[in-house]
Image 1 (cartoon, rainbow, N blue to C red):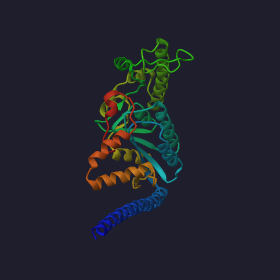
Image 2 (cartoon, rainbow, N blue to C red; image 1 turned 90 degrees about the vertical axis):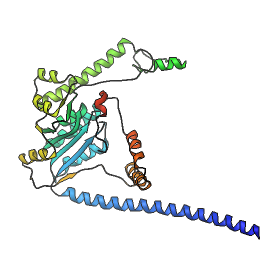
Image 3 (cartoon, one colour; image 1 turned 135 degrees about the vertical axis):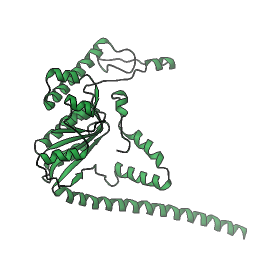
Image 4 (cartoon, rainbow, N blue to C red; image 1 turned 90 degrees about the horizontal axis):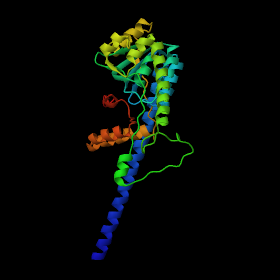
Length: 322
């Protein structure tokens, strides 16, 4: 009799585990299905809204890299006849020169067809300012940070640490400048000269963009292109921006350019694809909220963002949650 009861208990425990598994599986499937339906409905609604006349707003936040999604959105904005004007909301410490170049060129293409205004939030430095310069008008707040016109190349050197650990790193190369400068040891003078030549060439290209877009003389460009950053008020005095204010000032300029002031401003956001990384991140944040551990999601999300070695403290001058 006792054996039968024990067997019954074991069977019930197994049944409960199976039921729990299938309940969790059904819940996850239902969540994915709901997310897919919501995404489809949202995409249809967004497409309908974008077909009507409106002002497109695009946020450019964080470290600048080659961002295919952003470039696709800018290309769509360029071709969309419903977009009558564009607001670029910029909050970036800069990033890669190639990333800044790609976005700058996309902004210039839009500007050939419709008015574009850049509105600086906290920061538009280095490649972030390069992108702003691609617009027809730059608006920044009085306390915004603008500038950092220049190019930098940084790399770590682990030789001291390796010496302490007793690790000897050796390399056999086809030529002295192959893979230089390396992370190990002092680079040869020729390697540093090579990198410096690259930096100066990119710097000349950057200065040429700023001089052309802002109408600066060579001497004024050289004066501002020493890596300095400026407040919005200082930037206005130096000609780096055109007006002080926020998004309402940007809209006022668009109105002056003939854009109907009654048109709605519609943000062109990054698309969340069901089953993709962004959708998964959103689900994880939702679950974290239900469990009451949302404070853990922010550091994890921040750790997953692209971070480059930029301009010291300026590179961390971010508004969290943007």
